[in-house]
Length: 269
Image (tube, rainbow, N blue to C red; front, top):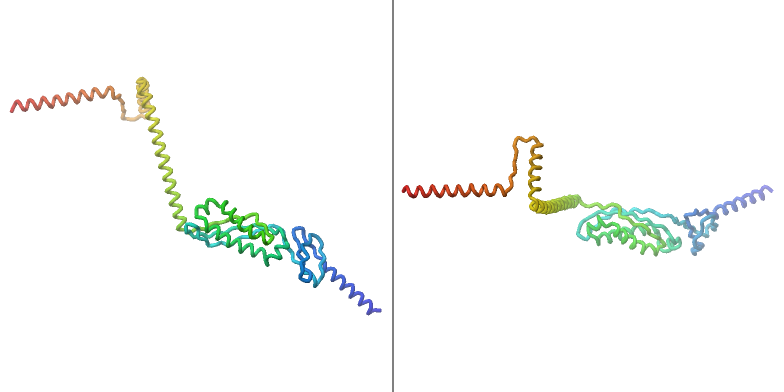
C-alpha cells in the first residue's frame, strides 16, 4: 500500500511538471513561433500557449519598436571630405514568421545593412548637402533600408542622422568662409545704402532747386542746429548764386591788376 501511494504521488508530480513545462504565457506585444519536430506551426499568442516538452521549440519574437544606434562610420563625401557620421534606426517586426525563417538574427542583420547603407548614401552627397539637407538623406536611408528589411518581415519607419563630425581644419575653413560671406553681405548692404542715400539726395536737391525759398529755410535751419551745440566756431553758408559773381569779380580784378603791372614794367624799360 505505501509503495502504491508513492508511485501515485510520483505520477501526480510528473503530470504536474509536464503541465507546467507545457504552458507558456505570451505577452500582448510578443508572438511565439513554434516548431514541432522541426516543422513550423506558425505564430501563437498572445495569452497561454501549450507546447509539448521535448517535441516543440518556441521562439519569442518582440513586436515593439526597437531603437538601434548605428556606430560612427568613417565616410568620404562626394567632395572628398572625411567625416564621421552616426545615425539611429527605429524598426519593428511585422511578420514574426519571416523574421525567424528568413534571417538568423533580424536585429544584427538590420544593423549591419544600415551601416553599409549609411556609408553608401553619405558617400554620394557633398558636405553642404550632408550639413544642410539631412531630411533628404534620411529619406534615402529609410527607403533603402526598408526595402531590404521588408524581406525579413521587418518594417523601418524612421532613420535619422544624429551627428556629423568633420576635421578641425575643415571647421576652421568653414568659419573663414562664413566670415567672408558675412563681410560680403555687409559691403553689399552698405553699397545699397549709399546708392539709396544718393538717390534721395538727388531728389532733395531737385526739390530745393524748384523752390528757392525752401533752400533759404534750409540754410536757417542749419544755422539753428549749429548754434544749439554751443560751438565756438560758426559756419555761415552762402548760396553759390551770391558767392559766384563775387568770386568772379575778384578774379577779374586780380587779372587786370596783373596786366597793368606788366605793361608798366615794359614801358619803363
